Image (tube, rainbow, N blue to C red):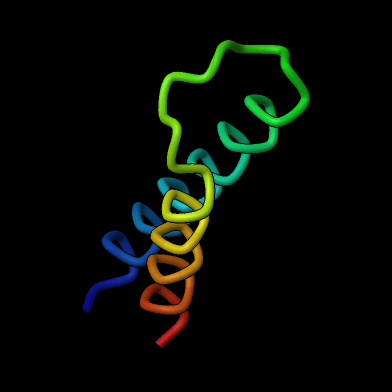
Length: 51
């Protein structure tokens, strides 16, 4: 995996995590009712990008 793709995966995982945090705080309406699974996907992408 190239460094460019790793950086892209990191950015996507950070965006997903921030999106879930903003939904929990009520700043943006609940677009997705699966907060837990979105966070799991964000964590998985982050772990994948570290390898």
